[in-house]
Length: 252
Length: 323
Image 1 (cartoon, chains in turn green, purple):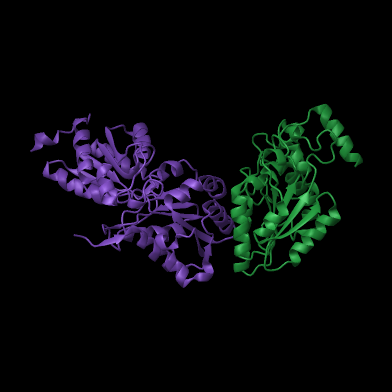
Image 2 (cartoon, chains in turn orange, cyan; image 1 turned 90 degrees about the vertical axis):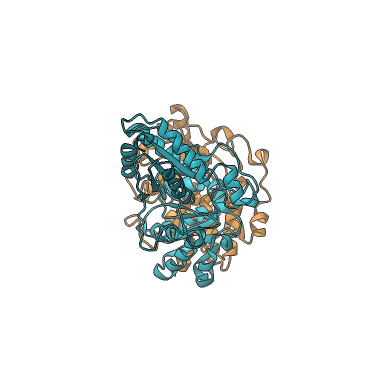
């Protein structure tokens, strides 16, 4: 998709694949045939640049035809470079400016409680996104209002656009920060699907406070020349690179 | 002398009424519910009041989530903090998503007075008018503010409502019509039209009286909807009077005056003057002192009107000739 579009963000898309698979193929109560089902669980992608992974998963689950994936970023398309709400169905929020998703998750979560719905709200953020102040405003809001139907997920791939996160501006110790804000914090290997699913279950069992799953991941996971490389944050692969990447992913 | 009442009180009463009439209405506050009058709603409907602390960005984006889940959230703070600090949240989470959020900016203009420039709000028409899907309202008195609050709740889509802090004359009555997108002629006239919003409507009416004494007939138009403009009423004024003066407690760069100018320069160009704040920040002082110091007075509107009629290009006889 990204190679066909000629631009996009492969690194941060590949790092969260298992996090999405755990939700869309197991944990989420959703129905691709009824995307507006009012009691569905919600998945909010706050790190909007990772949307190619979301589009791929949504298409695979039947929200829209897979053939449409090749329209990514090409006018006119529903598959925007950063997501637009409900474009296509299944995309719950717009994103692309970092730091807004968790606040929106809190709004959905507060409304669900007020309406007596048992829907859960999952929100994937990036680790670079932890540098946005609004994330911590939202973290305090969710804890203050006991929004235990919120599950924050940090795709902690360790790398942002220009350099490793630790070099740009350190965000650690992440688990302690979330705990200090009143959250139940879990730290897992985000590429181990068993750990991912266990973390989502543990979050659902937690009452009285929201849970954050800090998923330690590898940026560009599965493609040897992309893994851990800031240079692959926002660059599309060439035809030759794409062939090599797909060969590696298919053999994984 | 008409009765005085703060414009923000009209919002507080409207929100309270909505609490009873519409269960989908909820309120969010950034620790300023006493100032914005959202506290009246909080006291009666504590389970529908969300305290988000001093965190306007979080408040606005959370309001968007609430709206997308079917609520009608009113997010309340001082106008400058709400629209300045959270502008991008208003852009992305509210307007781009067409979330049904109501943004309540109290202490608009210079009305916070002594608190000084950082709390005064002189730029929000400009910054908000540029956002697609957003309705921008600035009522002229407490009665209209209550109607605007009820209308905002009934309107499906994002709305910004600008409120003043201080007691102001009641210019409208309970049965005066209020419709989003409509301006109203409060006083008819044929030599010049004074198009005002918010507290400047009161001063425009006073200016019309001063102009009458100088044999200039001024039409006064109350324009509580800054966006979308009432094109028909404004273009009729341009055609029928041939000279316009806008008046706003706001910068002249891109506010109501800018909006009117954008319209008439394309549809029916006429000489125009913009009364407002001249590309500067506010300062501390009593609101009345500041309004005078910043040229937001009936006398300033009168002077602008006398100047603009001299530059009229239409064949209409000059007022002095009809004496």
